[in-house]
Image 1 (cartoon, rainbow, N blue to C red):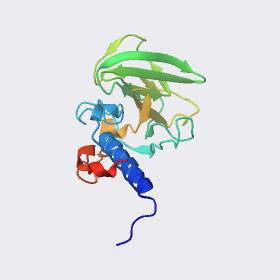
Image 2: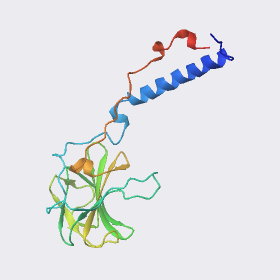
Image 3: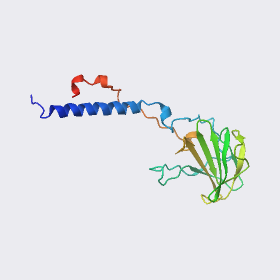
Image 4: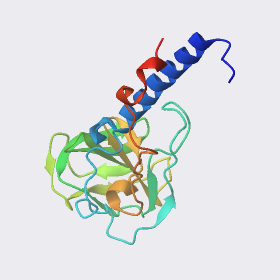
Length: 193
């Protein structure tokens, strides 16, 4: 039987490995509330599609690689100018006005969730309570997609998420543990220097 040349290094490497494994296990077992995309997700029956017509999506959500990177932080739904836009869920109008060159409405919902719609001419005012299905404005003309679509965005704790999580159409991803949990108690004491 050969003896390792550097037994101290081997023990140190095992100790570091055990600590890293414990940290990864702790992160996997962290509560769901730590992840904004998993928090406050209502059942699909709680949110209503904001348009009365069929749900035709003309451009999908494209998550950016980094918060400042390019992407499409919402979805575009086929719509026509003058079409009514409805509140997807109960909430309070957080913003109703012009952002750069387009009319936008943002509604604050429970659980630190915001829904935003552009280009929409508001029929509600900031601070006004709205109920699910209530008309909040009409599709207007804006540079995002002229008058042939409605841009729908959803933010949870300030981070953009795919709106279809709330409107139905995609399943939420759920992370599962890869192996049984290992704690430092499972590592032999003689592994540490």
